[in-house]
Image (cartoon, rainbow, N blue to C red):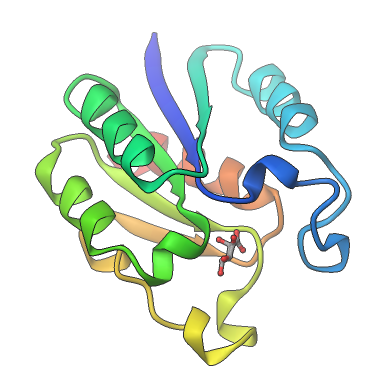
Length: 141
Ligand code: DQA
């Protein structure tokens, strides 16, 4: 059974409550259940942290053994050389995802430190970005 790790960064624990006009009304837990139903032949693990070092620890933990990582690093996308280095340090492919289309938003969201360390990026498809990320890992290995 293939193992995929989803990692969400800061403030994504508040999905469903946080800026619903940007991120929608669904909690990640509810969406995760849909994903698990849809990908019942996968082991789909989920981790969320608001702390940069904890995200790096999780990348290290799963980054040599899983089949893929779907990462939404939240605002750390735009600030974190340390997370970019962690992605470069592991062997498992990382797919960068964003719920919102960051390129339609503030200029400071247009640059990602992570993109060139990742296998690819999926941006702006709402929660469906995560499903597309999993599909990309499965089909473009
Ligand atoms: C986000 C976009 C980031 O700019 C923002 O800081 C987030 C969420 C997204 O999924 O659209 O926290 O990564």
